[in-house]
Image 1: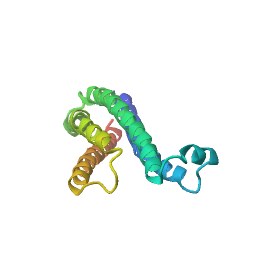
Image 2: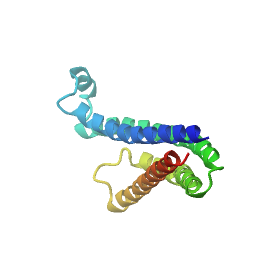
Image 3: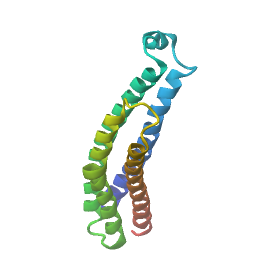
Image 4: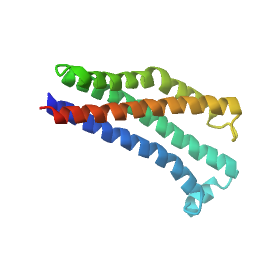
Amino acid sequence: MRPTALLAIGVWIGLLAASWAMATASFRTTDRLLGTEARPELQARLSPLSPEDRRAVLRHVAAETNRWMFRTWTLAELVLAVVLVAATWGRGGATRVLALLAAAAVIVQLVGLAPAIATLGRSLDFVPRPLPAATGRRFGLLHAAYMLADVVKMVALAAAAALIARRP
């Protein structure tokens, strides 16, 4: 089961890092497309909209893409968590605890954080910026909690990989 556990961890860490890159890139792409890199065809099609509306529409597309990606990704993580827990179950000790910790973080994200972020995020997609302080703080706290769960997973997975690789 050692190769299975290491493979699950490797895939999980790789996709976790990729999800961070994709989420960041989608919103940066919005800014890029509204800046000097905008194609003339896009500028022409968006010209009837005010600059604020152009940004809101493109950020909405980026946000919806991210919501789909994170919803799908969290389900894939759940599968990886089951594989990893099963692969480490016989090892016992710290390795099993780390696998369970990573799995618990996924469940917290899937059941609690992701739905709350998606619902609040959709309600804010077309709200003028800056957001009202209380609303911005709530979204920021949810986002920070989600990222903290990601960091917990990353650390737990890296530690589990180190333990598994060290012990035959």
